[in-house]
Amino acid sequence: MTAKIVLLNGVGSAGKSSIAKDANDHSRTLPACADGCVPGDAARGAAEPYERLRLRTLLQDGKPSVVIKAGPVGRRTMQGMRHAVAAMAGQGNNLIVDDVLCDDEMSEYLSLLSGFELYLVGVFAPLECAGRIQQEFRL
Image (cartoon, rainbow, N blue to C red):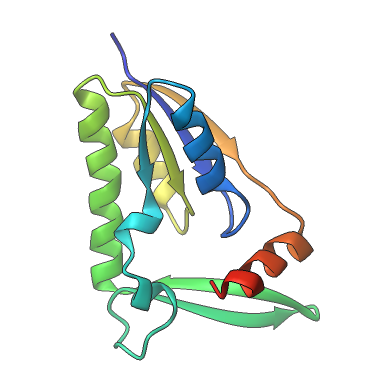
């Protein structure tokens, strides 16, 4: 039986993790969350050299925007997660994957998961909502 994979993609605080948790609670799937692969200090822009991930908030057209840059450790970590997803699916596990795709990561997912039943889901939230959530929880 071919594994089924739902890939949730969207900005931080759009609700991907909540959707994945709820779907996991009501189905026979395993969760795979990018948040679990990123150490908290790196995700919050620790002073560590550009090794893992660096988040920078910029103003674009007067509105806040977040730029995510991965250093060598961050790229290897996230690439390892994508390969782990493929390995788990290869063992027949149905998965719900929660990720924020950057650069060329979608093409890697499409290549790694081409032998499975893959559903791509974009998760969106109004900027005001996502910004409020990030401020309230200091994400």
